[in-house]
Image (cartoon, rainbow, N blue to C red; front, side, top):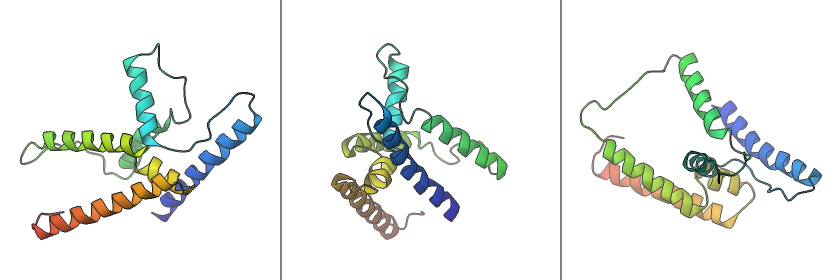
Length: 153
């Protein structure tokens, strides 16, 4: 697991370094940025909704497909790939509600946990650290509520 954490940290640092190197050689203004799943998701959504007004291929255009393909290959190589459904009750509504709330939170926070937490935290952005603290507090409060009600985790 430490290897994967190292690769994640290095990819964030490489994002900053490589976009800065490109920006310093360009005659046009180029935004210096690193990894963020919410901006990649927004870019993909704009491409699906309207190809005429969608932005040109951006920095993180390959992030979502690469994450999907990498996780698929990892599950297949590790022998853990399987299709699963709901076993007892249909909780699709719960999962969709959670997904909508997380997407809304990512927009309000200016990024998801990767974009706001890791990437923004690596440059000591105040909003990123505020977001990280709120994520930690929310997770801790949720864990305590679950534990006090005797729910399985």
